[in-house]
Image 1 (cartoon, one colour):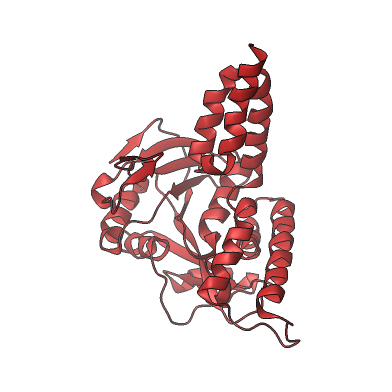
Image 2 (cartoon, one colour):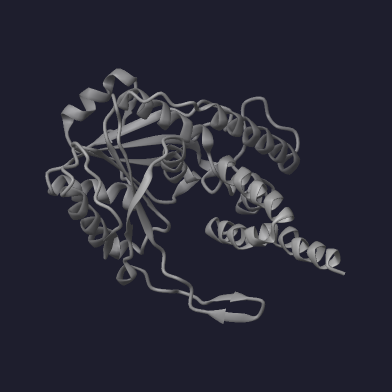
Length: 321
């Protein structure tokens, strides 16, 4: 079920859809657009029939059935640029539900006379993590490939685009909506680690295509940090790094890298700044504690901040004595 909060008046908008996937490339690219362009939410996808719990959640010994994942539709009205509908899905459903879920979304956006569907994806390649991430393109129609040829992209001549980031384009094509997938290269040994370099490369293409000026400096600094940390970890884990490149990492190596980078890569910088702002505010006004807790839960980072959050109440208790 898709529940509309408002019905925006849009003129032939393009539609961008993203779900979490390898390197968090697609989701982070869409999330960046949402934050910097101030998209407004207008509908919520509640499709519990496509998600079945595979486990229960446990917190402090108490178990419960977890909430079903949701997705949100946002809109942006451009002045000299195209109107955009953006969809962010929290979780990809099991593959057997990918097509019916895509159909539900496509049928919903058709009433807004969407002109084109965009999705993003990661493309694992045998490249070094210090290399620039090149962008590949696949489209539902040959004329779209010609349209994107001016951006010097590599055409995905054959292969597969797995998950909803690919399937929704196929469903859209059957419904007579043209679509494009932009794939950013990531090193095959870092598929489980956020890759802002690939995200940035995709956003550079979208910026040119849509005619929207995007300041990508925050992603550039994030890329540099992660690149340096991976370099340190590879040196530590593999010994002296060969001049010719790096040997593939094992699953254990990747787990260690993920743990060391988690504190930095879990949150967009804007979200982390907002959380720190709320902590400062709650230190002075405890009525903000509920809002802070909601923000931590929204990003699923309460565990990371739990001690700091509980300290607010300890300090308040000492002040009252």
